Length: 414
Image 1 (cartoon, rainbow, N blue to C red):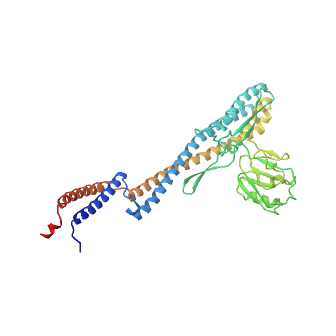
Image 2 (tube, helix red, strand yellow; image 1 turned 90 degrees about the vertical axis):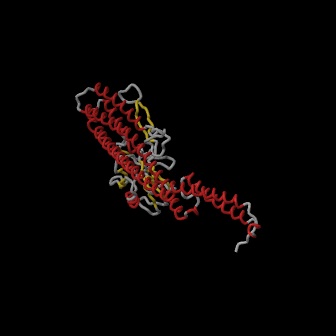
Image 3 (cartoon, rainbow, N blue to C red; image 1 turned 30 degrees about the horizontal axis):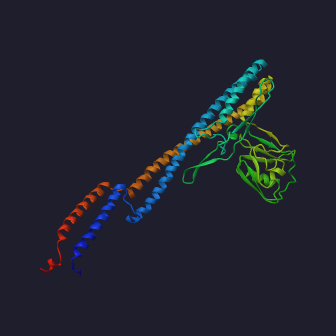
């Protein structure tokens, strides 16, 4: 039973007007944002789905951007590698020409001038900087110049020429996420891309009696190898060969020293992260020296870079040594060209993979956007219809309220 009083009409009218204004305000907000859910209580289940979809859509868009950035990087890095490959092909042509024994020493010196210019072009490509101002072939040390050039006197030349090229970058790889927990490794270390031959390291120190006196960790081409107390050289060799690094360790049958050989063309990277295992075996100097130029004084090294191969050709031409050109130098150039072709092919395959990731993420983004629209987007036609109905109801309520405000308790007592 309701109590009838003079304030009843006013209270009832005010209550329903506030209720209508609340519903009208809600639908106006929905139309303004074009979102069906403005508060979690509007549809808790759909709101939960919507949060998940929107979070996933943000990640997919980021994956797509990452893949697009990767394709750009692969494009301009592959351009420099292709140009370097053309340079090496021209260098090989000159080597073949100079190795036939027909040309005089003066002719070979003239060829050496062109080889020296091609060497400068090769170094320029190796030190290339991308559109973001960062070095392309420096590994993760992108703020530095990847290769440092040393000038020196060369027999047959009246001016100092490039005598050595040293790598200043790192061998670490950048991993870019292109899908949920799926990464593309960007391996642009200059001492891999611009290396000509498999590197071999020969230690002259007898390692047969060595035994680890403390635990240690080795860095072998970026792979960690854990040394435990009591390990001997045989167990150490087994651990290195099972580490996944592109390196084969073995015991020299003559010197009994620990030797290393890379399984592809790149510069070997050796370091004692903790302990002094490699230092004790005479492989590297103390830990204050950083790789890759930290090898011990008694260590012999073979296998050089593309720069070493071109420098050897130029120097042999200045000396007029056709025999060296047609033998060791030409073999080194061929090995370097094959290695560079492999790197270009790897870059091209990485580009194709990144391109496929772009297409897949683009399709995923469209699908997730449709799910977001289904759960959260507003049916604008229905919303406008409801808005007009609420406005009409509100106007009718206000009109009736104006007529009822003149009523009092005496109207009910007639």
